[in-house]
Image (cartoon, rainbow, N blue to C red; front, top):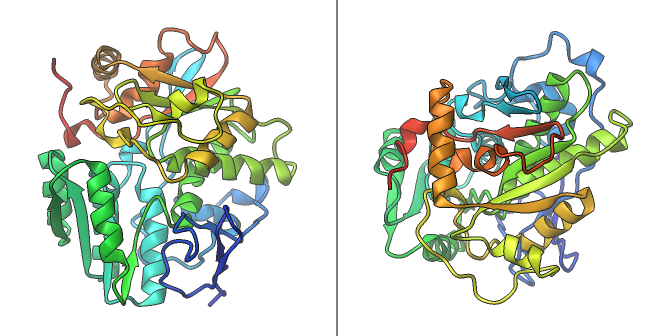
Length: 368
């Protein structure tokens, strides 16, 4: 079996050896990155490979998957002449989080913990629960009160133990991190564990293949904790570094106006979060993250790409969800945020791709 790469702290450089159950930097308690710089395969060599995200084996830090459910290779469809949508709600657990969760489950299977633990507003927890079920690993998922009942039902259906935490998403994360420090626990964090990002980056590798070896002018992604955006940035760097694309797309990050700490920092020209984030209820529960731990990395990635931040109102979210449903695409309210941000021409006609990240059956329609 191929040796696992080490992790390191992007803030202070502290290294964490492969095989460790440590989930954060032991010095600053921040999230970890992976010491892994792969070279992707050229387009011509992908013909005939497995029809899942594992076709990009050269770019994944784990090989020979045993818990795959066929995740990845989601369709790309046109919404209008300049905007296409990648249908990531057609994943095994009905959200894009499967891309990262399968890597976490594969890693946990190799490390052999007594317990896998995750925290989530719903979709990441569902994905981790499903892949742990596939791997035969005991799993506990922490969720905030008010999480969609359908998401809770899905988590429990996969056999995971559910812990509903009083308070918001931040309170849930604190409770999970405290439990994650217990001996023998693998914290399957989609925020702190870098393997998750190396799963989500396959979104852009697929997009590159879908478009015949190129990327659009703009890649638009919803941002709460930023796992899809940071994964996209990894993939763009890999493809560009290998000479497989000659220009990098701009990364546009979308937040709900009700909870927009990164968009606020961006507007202030800051390199990190600024002040205390004002919050309000939002239909986009999956990206309602007041204090994303990777804020500095997210802001840096958007700035380096020549992109920007966009925010959407609750009315925009509702109208975008109804619009997509009228086109045959039933998407959850968080998953329509990117279409809500660009459907009125915010990108000036540049070619763009938006992800539709979660299925509508998870939340139902947003109502006034």
